[in-house]
Image (cartoon, rainbow, N blue to C red; front, side, top):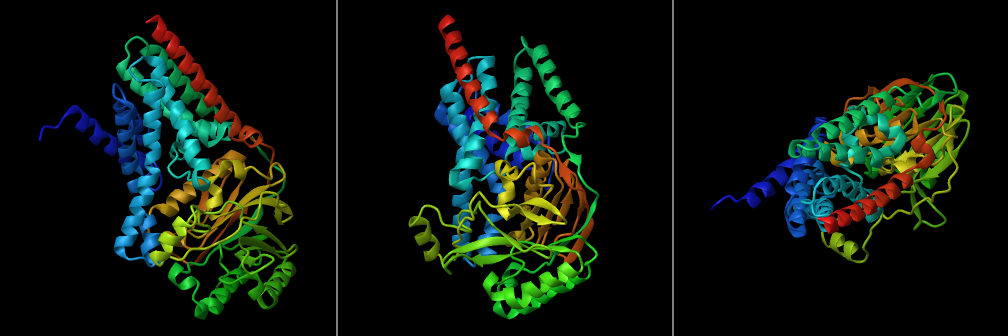
Length: 500
């Protein structure tokens, strides 16, 4: 069979997708993201919108096929589905999210065919960013995994994160990829484009030196408990007492810390089941030691049918936060009744939680209010800035035990680090099996616990005040700016076509 040019570029799109994922944790070859997008954008030239959709989809299959392969572990190992069902559901998951790079390709060629010069080529990063926003914030409550900005935490582009957030930084990364392609292809503009590229990256490096927030108090000693209770053992009724005693014992060894944090649902029982005999005495012990304890457990609402994933503070103040941004197909079931019927037929039982709502008061520990996020909530920048400037630091509790020894815990920590940079706050991240970490306001990991080991991570945090530009404005200005920019480019391209 003859290997045509079309076949060649189709194959390149798949390889580019795989290279793209290698830019993210735990591989961390950051600059591969730029090379991968340059290859993808090159594959969209001088073809039909349908072919661009295909190549974008093939890119997505390569990227998500590697990047979210951990879904299989969750479904098979802990959801107890058989191999065929697990493979089928993982394939559907990957295939669905691969549609979005395909959509970016289709729109890029349909709106501004990419054989019309420089304006058309510069429009691709705008389309890419808008599709990332659509996928990351709107579809199925948002799925921001493998958004390009997360791969740039170790490059000069990280300087833009506290200014324009994930989407603004993602646009600049995609623009870089497009400019690199143009430099290789356009002799007429190569010097101008090189200067533009140099300005973008030099400015990012300069921005990294700016401190947008400042200390408002003395350093605080903290302890993060990583219990390492495996997911298949965590909820067994016969293990409940031992689990509670395990966390209690680890906590009692660190009463000298001002703040102690337990991971997501570290208490494998509803609040009403453990409040009187376990939580209240534990809270009193914390108060006597002048320690604030942050724990996590499920809680009922007015009725037993009303369930919440929650975080509680014990010690000087007892208060509760109820998770507001729920995980689709994990904590609630979208597309009912179809999704429920399919999963029930495969004998996969998932949670049915309620959202705690947006307007919840901040919890406090060590005398300072903090922003709470539970697991998946740390993937959304716009929600991570609610509570500023009052909040002095961030707390994330997570259980990535669902994904075993895969790349997911590393990817999730990378995502969480972005919230520290956007807000200019320290982040305390306590997980069940890893990756537990203390993150500085610049996104650097101060200390990290090893995965799959019961341990306590001790360290210091400094309460911070002030606001980054992103914390003041959020994502909305960037998204509207991209829409306006796309409109302007369409108008200029049509004028250029008329003159031609």
